[in-house]
Image 1 (tube, rainbow, N blue to C red):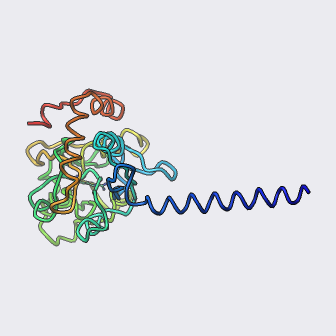
Image 2 (cartoon, helix red, strand yellow; image 1 turned 180 degrees about the horizontal axis):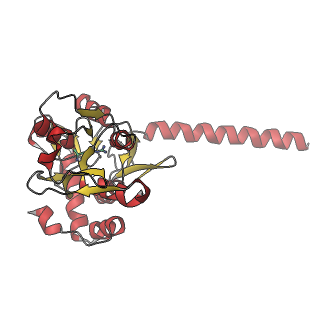
Image 3 (tube, rainbow, N blue to C red; image 1 turned 90 degrees about the horizontal axis):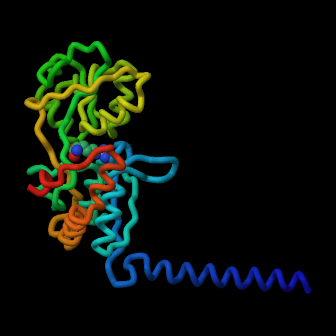
Amino acid sequence: MRKNGILFALFISIVLVLAACGTGSEKANSDGDGKKKLRVVTDAAYAPFEYMDKDKIIGFDVDIFTAAAEEAGYDFEIVNVGWDPLFAELENGTADVGLSAITINDDRLKSYDFSVPYFESTNKILAPEGTDIKKAADLTDKTVAVQSGTTGADAVDALLGNGNEKVKKFENNNLAILEMKNQGADAVVADNAVLEAYAKNNPQENFIVIEDKEGFESEYYGFMFPKDSEMEADLSKGLNAIFDNGKYAEIYKEWFGQDPDIENLKA
Ligand code: ARG
């Protein structure tokens, strides 16, 4: 009798699981109001913007995207595919959005669309304490580690010359920093907030962050889309909504401990 009861319970559980799987796959690509579930791709090796906390992708970008997508009524999943694959996925249309502290620039605008800007950034230099590097131009006779395909890599290529073997390029920024830690490079060039967070969170490394306002341009991050994506307008609207309703400022303060300059982003 008891055995039958258990078998019956098992049978019911299997039926329920199968039913759940069925509706799951039907709904995989759209939510209730017919909007597509977005595949958002990232390179989660860029704290504090996107990074792994155990098996979870977290960061400022994740919180901002979540808030903007909620405003726009999109369901989504964020997948850690890596930097180069992110561009490839948007190019061949297997992903809907690139979310990765991605700088809006003319080169990328040829192949992709961007949302309105949501963060201002600039490249800076990370180097061991006691370095004689004071500005970008001092990098010309140094070995510099960068993440390949970034604006930091472009800036260093421009300074040292394309193809210069003293520019060491890595698949992600953490590997570039590791190279310097292992004394394979004199400096790393990357986005200021990333280098500042690294130096602050790893005081035992004795790295300093060097700013050069003349040497590096001001940049703006956007969500990146395949060309002519219909979602761009919705998510830009979502961003504008969180600029206006205080949500953006709240998230910014959580991650950076200060108020954002939203007017500068909108300008
Ligand atoms: N902002 C720079 C760029 O767009 C670096 C971004 C790198 N992002 C990342 N998640 N690894 O080129």
